[in-house]
Image (tube, rainbow, N blue to C red):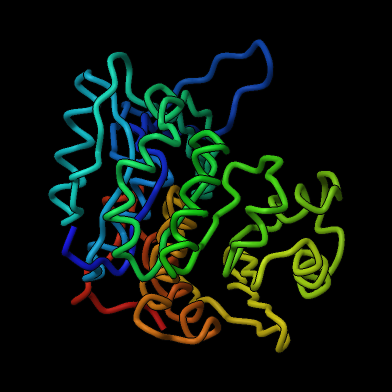
Length: 304
């Protein structure tokens, strides 16, 4: 493939089924919610759409089902400007995310992988031309880990920068971590990878970043929600502030952050500079409902 890409995303594409609730139900309890809203989503789809809306040259390797959700997701990605040469169709259902959004804008998500679970290393082999033409290859964990590892290897072999968003958190091989530059995690994902368990923040983000670097990645970004992010590599750690905005819906905001980070890294920004821009994009995304529908375009003014 002769076309060059800023970012190639290898990952999941889901239909987000979203219901607003005043409070989440306890076990065995039923609560009433808002009308059901259906949005294009999936960690991979969100990142691809966000990077393309920001003006990036973006391709995606993913699978959708041969159902109505699959058609809907393909149309949404095309509308965002994502190249779909390797958006593959699998017999059966597309991936679906069941999302409840509380009055504070925070969300809880259950994902049914559907076609995403069938994205295979052979698909990576077939897409090597696209992967080798990318400056940055963005990976996540809503697709099988062997496929993610195959994509990371292909990207590294081609000289592309590998970005792994450890979402949802899962055990990954050390080889995969060693290829990451950066590894992107939120505090819960960082704690999982470090074996710290749940609960409140176990230690300062800078200490967590140092411990994560010892696991092998070349650099680390820890996202801190409304508090911004922390970047770390061999030269040290940098704290990046996030703009203060009114939060409507946090769904997909982390994906917007990672997409913007990847795009700016592809264009040559230093890690902390890319993270500063990404924090502004993430803040813009929480001001509107939905995931992809909330993402800013290149010409939009971002919060400061």
